[in-house]
Length: 404
Ligand SMILES: Nc1ncnc2c1ncn2[C@@H]1O[C@H](COP(=O)(O)OP(=O)(O)O)[C@@H](O)[C@H]1O
Ligand SMILES: [Mg+2]
Image (cartoon, rainbow, N blue to C red; front, top):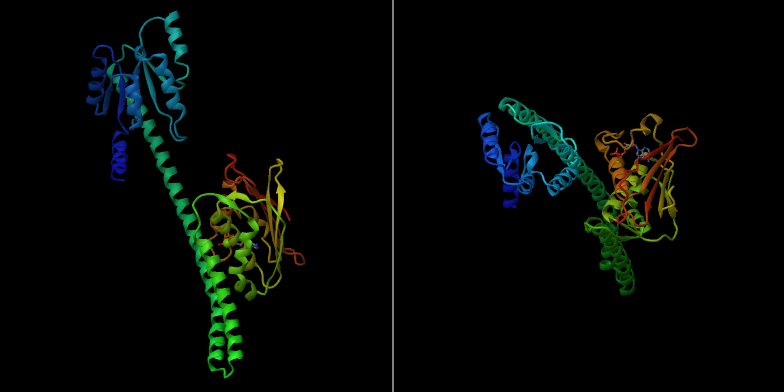
């Protein structure tokens, strides 16, 4: 760990230096001292190969003498430049040889074609021109670092949001579980009291038998809870309908308190390869959203084999409620973070995380909703491909909102 921190720190220190490859005579040393006189940190490299190794330790730009470039070096640079992260456009300056355009100079230029976007400076070059060109390249590089840092900060912030939504789901679930366990526990306390005060051994045994089945209920609830929290961090084969069965055990109390009827229609489907914990989090959010939007009414959950538009096989989950519906003005932004109508009770992150999880699994999510007086309600339809994770598509699937 210490080693990693040290290497990152030295990478940061190297970020503004210029690498120089001019191995003929003392060109390298002369260029270095010209730049250092202008306050620019420079490293004289003996070859392009050495410069490529230095580049990996961090650098702002590279200055290469044309004659130092072999075909292998050109390919080496082309590969390094082609594999840069998206924020990076590494500045490359080639010091060309003075003189007329000849067949040989043209050939050299053609060979350099893979090093796209290299800036060419013809020698002899005035020291002040060299310094200002290099300063410009460093300035361009600094702007790229700013973009990199901005992107990294944004990623960190998004990660923090994802974690806070996970915690919110855990908090809601904990409250529901406490209710869920409390009911059988109260029954057990009563049944044990009745057994203890009963004068007949047979009656006492009957009470204890009932207490035992209540204990089995508590044990089932804790098992489902453990499944929720003991998620392996890797994808596994799983049955989507089993996730719903455990979710319904855990949210039973909440569903009853809201006087909601849940209808399930789980057809036989192939298992899919997916991150179980993430699917639980996503379905848990769809279920609590439906409960929050309903007072009485129905929630219908369908799990069926399905195909997406490209014919890819997988599982389709349809999640319908007869709740208040989502107003048309809100539908377009519903998958964006912080869109919520629940004030302090909501995070507005649930559907954003849901759409990210679907995208990560190469699936898609569609929404249909109506607030009309006699047919209000919301339907989310989620498609997850069978090989959800091993064949995740690179193209992000945008959530689709249908007018309803
Ligand atoms: N099934 C639904 N019925 C009605 N409104 C819904 C439904 N699902 C989501 N919404 C609306 O979308 C908003 C965003 O949901 P979500 O991203 O899960 O955040 P949160 O639940 O924390 O508010 C909710 O506040 C609610 O207004
Ligand atoms: Mg929610």
